[in-house]
Figure 1 (cartoon, rainbow, N blue to C red):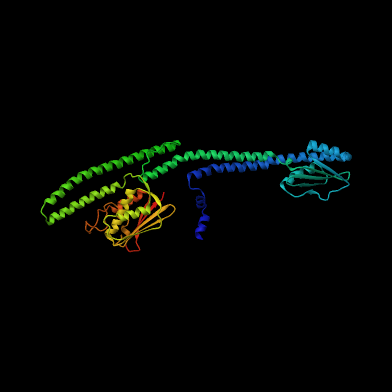
Figure 2 (cartoon, rainbow, N blue to C red; figure 1 turned 30 degrees about the vertical axis):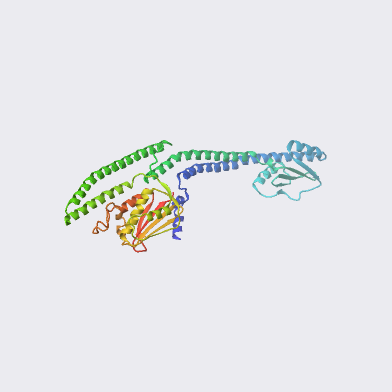
Length: 445
């Protein structure tokens, strides 16, 4: 109840919830609002002023014709046929005279907007008892003549209505609709480069390179596209230089490491020699792990794969698998992934479970927009206060563990970079089985 009152009492929040979210929809709203206001103002002014004037003039004309026919009948009631013929020919009035009759009803049949103009006109022109009735097709006017008779006049109702009013409103609405459609087409063309820029930035942030963005649109959008291309080139140059540097470091380090391994192999066995071999082996693991971490940002083309079948195949071919892994997919949707990068991230997670637990569980859930993969085990898990730190490169939770059993502290860093490269999210939690629960969320499209 309090939440509802807060929303009602805050008009800014109501306006924010009511307004459309997309730029194109808001631009159309900006275009439509003045057009609707113009239509409302024009309709009000036209109906209140112009239509009133036209109706008053037409009512005066009709009342004048009735008064003319009445005067003619009162002067010469025996010429009713000639009067009927002339009235029909020149004034489009259907005239009938009933001698020795009086009116049974007086005034207007009802009180409405159209009757008001006719009553005013008849009061001024006829100045005799009359009865007025208007239906959807005709106007009926009955007037008492001074020679004891009733003059009955009928004419089509369209003579009281101006066609100009309806035509103006129709043409105004049609022209406003046409202008709105033209403006919306131009607005869509102006927004399209901005939408392409947003898509290119999103794809580039996920590691996909779509080439240089086409520079088009308004001056500000052209400048924005040009700056994006410059930024893209700088980032690619930085990544290329880093990859080249890592390749050089790898080449320079592998040679002395190999030489040290050969020299240690030729040395007589001793405690010092074994310790040095372990140190050299760890150096080699660190170099290879760092290179694997750097490869996570490399460009790779996305491919559409049935994800459940792909994960099952990956589990079957998992190296060093010694624990049972239960995989329970809800569905087998086809999503776009970078296969090598996805293989690396899921392999790291499963090998981590294989190293620290005796059983692993893997599940797959899908929604209309997302695909969620959950990896759980019954190992020691990770304390809540350390769950963010374990994603940092070269961070190891247990610094006293055996280096052969541990790694170089890059496993989860590689996993998070791979997940982000797919546009997804990763979250760590406590598993119901007592160990670690890793939740991976990927967009389906």
